[in-house]
Image 1 (cartoon, rainbow, N blue to C red):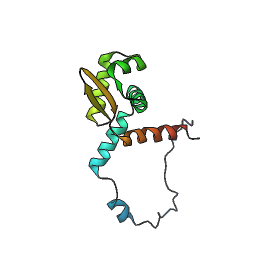
Image 2 (cartoon, helix red, strand yellow):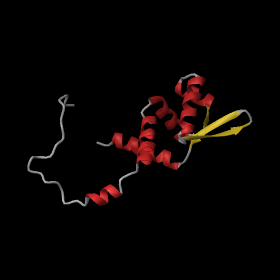
Image 3 (cartoon, helix red, strand yellow):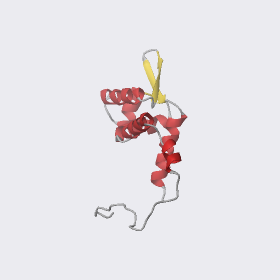
Image 4 (cartoon, rainbow, N blue to C red):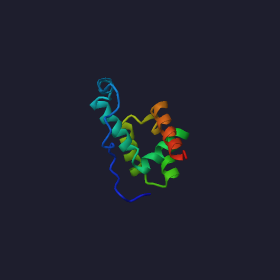
Length: 122
């Protein structure tokens, strides 16, 4: 990887494209959606949360199961699950005193799978 700072600029002779900027601007994601998307990607920026999501993409699990899979304490796992639940990335299902966690919907799984595929892409 090149350590030098590269500044992306147009050539001096560039007069831009013949693009209709008004159309692009009108179709640009709104501020609320941009913030929500940035929050989602920030959430995926934590390796523990990524591992939890990956584990839950394979199977519905309880907190105890996740502590075994990730070799972490129950308090740490619970904290991360609460964070993920607040962002609607995971959901819970209670059976008696046991709480089972799974991904909130197929979209979460698809984002995760596509991100992995992108990283593995040469």
